[in-house]
Image (cartoon, rainbow, N blue to C red; front, side):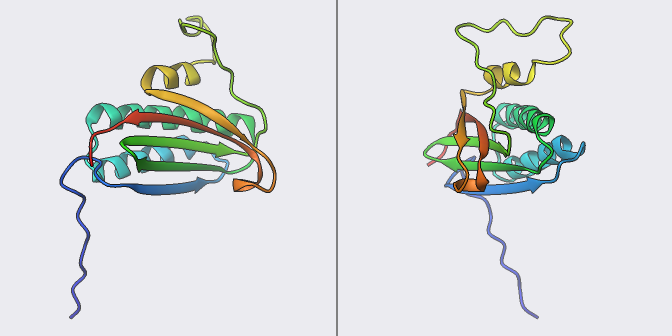
Length: 153
């Protein structure tokens, strides 16, 4: 019988560099699937509970935004490199997300939308976006990302 050797995660939380990617169809189940994916990856790499919770929330919000502005699939990427964890969400919409000048107080209490990017800004160390042209990665659209500083090598 052949034994299967499993590679154990590094001794330090989020140690080493790695990348995970997931593409999901346009579906109302998308945000939940992405939350579960992010939780599984970060739990396996023994992420700090604050980073894990914040990354799940931000992933859910960014995927929800992407699904609201396009009818296409959405791609999610988690990358750990250079002491940072980056979560990025790609969609085919060419329109950038709104940015706020200066301090953000958040949406009005009775607003029905507008909390996703406010939560992203509040929960991540940094966030931003890239507009992608046709012929480049994923065929155009935009990528919205959030980052956290993480311990490790």
